[in-house]
Image 1 (cartoon, rainbow, N blue to C red):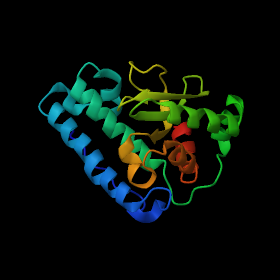
Image 2 (cartoon, one colour; image 1 turned 135 degrees about the vertical axis):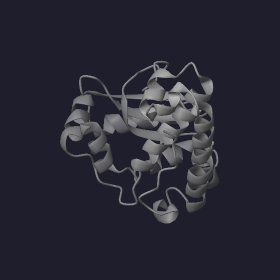
Image 3 (cartoon, one colour; image 1 turned 180 degrees about the vertical axis):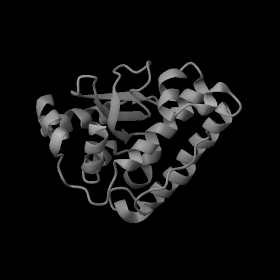
Image 4 (cartoon, rainbow, N blue to C red; image 1 turned 180 degrees about the horizontal axis):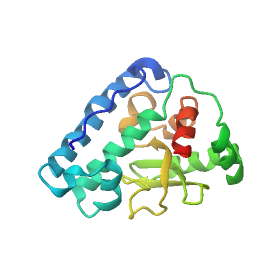
Length: 198
């Protein structure tokens, strides 16, 4: 089962001015596609070929090409899903309750922003669902994610923010905090709720 580039549910320019069309196009068609191409090369003809991307993230971390490129594919696939041009809504339902138990939306926003801004070098900030249904905020380096046993904090990602420079540099240059702040205007909370409930 080789992997392919997921289609987006919005156009490249739909997230402007938060994320510009050129960045979206390069990020999706070049960066994400490269992770998929390299992952497929690494697994083709091996026993890993029939595993899901989640299984690869959970079990193949000692295989560095699969870890890096599988993580890149999983992380970006989630990232595209949690973006929407119709942002600015707030979480509802079970996710809202879980965020209230976490300490409230503003505490989550502060912690998530801090995780994204302070991730040294390249990586990701995450909101994850724990086994007991509670939420945690964490971050990972490079293309690691919280499904991987090497992660500092493991859980199921329901929201992820790419803080590699390729995700924001054309628009924000070295102003990562501005990019992190703007991200909250394009979060698809309906999708995050769906991922939480799943």
